[in-house]
Length: 207
Image 1 (spheres, rainbow, N blue to C red):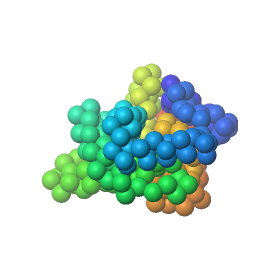
Image 2: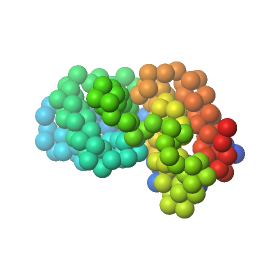
Image 3: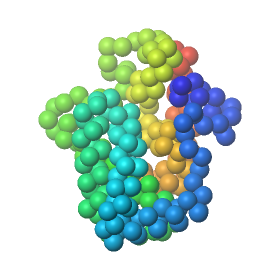
Image 4: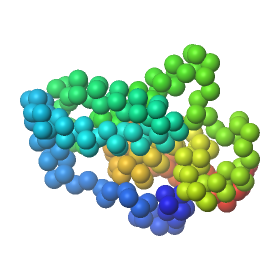
């Protein structure tokens, strides 16, 4: 389970949750750039490849943030449409194409939260301290069912983003910094605080 794998990261920082990709290499980035160039030339195979590769990634990212299947599907579809519409503007500058895609997803997620707030809707990513669920119950559910999403709600928005992007999507610190518009130092600090909070949640501790 992700939640169990994450519990050991403070002591074994090189370990990643099951299913997480190894860090991308410069060669991977160049191969991806070649695919993107074909897509920019409107090569249908390349466009289809990018869509099939990134739609499930964005859906997973959105679902962990929103906890709603339909909202995640809508956001993923919206992001992929924006990616395909804007792909000619993308320029390879060393960071992976995936960081550019997830930056779009991040911006769309922020827009969605703002719309919900304007309409008086409760955000599904509000900290659970404001909800009628006890911390011990939360920890038990997270451990028994592997529901990482529940534990993530105890984190701040940026801490949650770092955990999902780095340990589930497999981004390195530079790419996470690119997505969130923060420095690599800030990302390391957010990661450290997020993992400490997750360990508290998993042990049932509160402040």
